[in-house]
Image 1 (cartoon, rainbow, N blue to C red):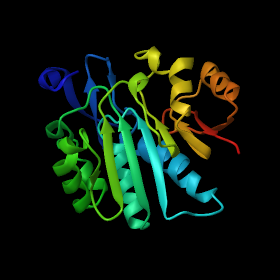
Image 2: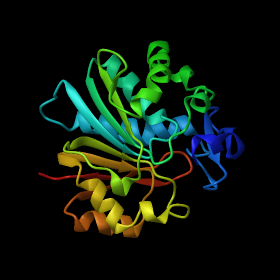
Image 3: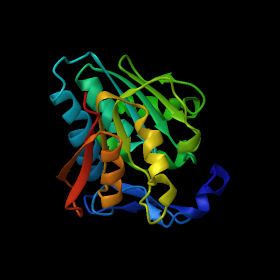
Image 4: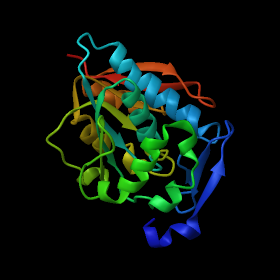
Length: 233
């Protein structure tokens, strides 16, 4: 999955809503749902995650912090950055990604159609540096990509929202086990929101055992339900 291997095993794929994803032959899965990459990202992460957090926070702060597990193509970040810029909301964003894609293949996804030109250009120009240190894309958005495995991720920061967007458990079971979920939720603030496209009995039990409130939400196209969890105060 390293950059020198990417041209042979990564392929741009068009999904049902007309937006693109990338198929990773080494994993045997796409980075987004074939039922609609853009619809999935908007529904699961922006609407049910970021927007839900803002709508249910009594004291709206001028900033929001997001941790993403599985940065992948950057689509969730790009939509979040575009949303926060339009809302004039400061965004502090860290994406955990063990095997970062190259800027070149991300540039072929066509995601520039869904966000402002300035954010897209700044993202591609800053992408390599974001793998090393935090970068400011504009007045509102800061991005850092932690190029390491989830188990090796450390931060003194706790986040308002966690996007959990790892490959499915059938392909990466280690990302969904109790240790991985427990490690991830250490970084969620009290009152914070965790969202993921999947919902399973094991996942619900693990999260409930950690004291969070688990909610079922309507799923993106192709999935009946998804999971949201609140770190209750």
